[in-house]
Length: 121
Image (cartoon, rainbow, N blue to C red; front, side):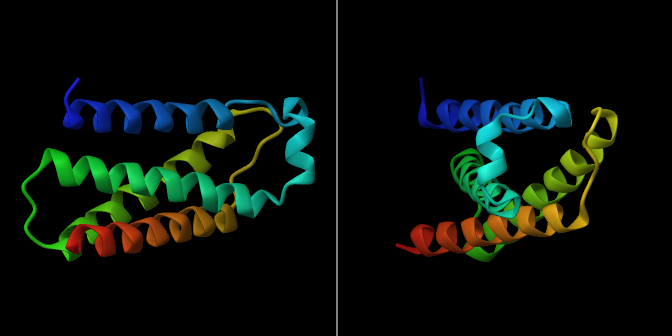
């Protein structure tokens, strides 16, 4: 499998994993999540998503400037976070939270910064 195909597959699978987690009804969430700060989980999962987006964009398209990769990564990741939060309206016992989306966006922002630094080298 080529690097491009691997990056695309990893991004799709991780995105589906996030959506699967958002599909779990509130009363069925694993007990381990009660011990972990919710906002930390959001930031870390979207940091990973952001790195996957950045890597996919870098391999899939010929983008000459790191700031363009940075911006597109941030836009895609933040939009996915907003859609994911709104998707939770459909899940019993779950509600969208603007602060979760803010932490999602911060995670993607950190990933875009890391990607930009790595890409320049």
